[in-house]
Image 1 (cartoon, rainbow, N blue to C red):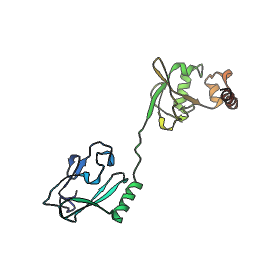
Image 2 (cartoon, rainbow, N blue to C red):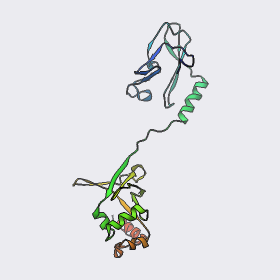
Image 3 (tube, helix red, strand yellow):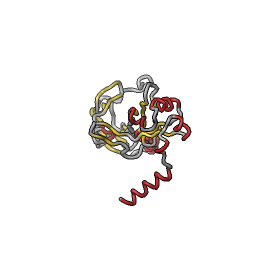
Image 4 (cartoon, rainbow, N blue to C red):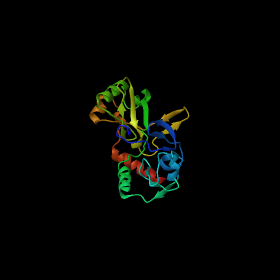
Length: 215
């Protein structure tokens, strides 16, 4: 790209692995940008003396904008750290304000088995159908899940939106996920739900409070 814009080669080779003209990948480390570079002068691996000149300036800038330094070549052919110009500082700030935080996507993929469904209704297949029709909302740890369109009740849910440590484990081995089915009482009756097991939310909260006080 630089050649197309009329720029000439600087004569400076940065540290890292060559990828393509003007592009290098740094090694892993604890320094700037996750590389071994801890002093901005260490970012330069090699200098072609025939192409550089005294007074030449090089901006060393971390991709996140957290660190920036201006280097200037002295009369001895060595780069020294000089004061960062205001325009370079403004560029650093702009990069820092427009960066995106590195974040993982953690998805839990699971399914609701027959024993779980029969614990809700006498007609497990009716529950499955109602979930796919949108009459029943499936959530995991309070987070609405995406239900896969195939048979059964299989889903994907965003773990990052759940409360801290929502899962449990049993020796089977198996993961125990907090699955919830939310529906109107009318729909619950239509599905053949266990009506005698219904408990008001206020009563559940009171039971939890009493258990908390007892502990």
